[in-house]
Image (cartoon, one colour):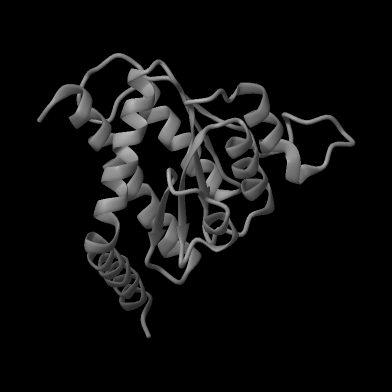
Length: 192
């Protein structure tokens, strides 16, 4: 198979995942945008986390909220938590690094947005547990059924299951969902 055909096939696979997701994720994205907006209007903050490429998704979300997506607006209180170990001392348990940041920065009424390709990242699961202990709501974006992250959510949390098998497709649709979340927040704050 020529490389150009392989690239074309990658585009088609990405397009198909987005088309498949439209119906299944629209409602949870809307619910997440609503609770995130309510949190921000109540002077709460959004903390975002993930490990590896999922950590980059958290940085992307926080950057858009703190600056803007398409419309000019004041910056919103959003922070990406570090998952690279720089936020920990040398002998700390790496799985607790994000959780310790949630414990230090999260307050009741804040929201943790947790990204994990398959919902199994131990550091993310521990961060979710800590957020629940701090009376924070949680939004999880994960592929498949949400894995271990989905199992510890409460009824007031939001699970956005991304209908993809491969990590590449999960990360691609995650960026699209981030843009939908931010657009939804702008819609609630600024109108159409």
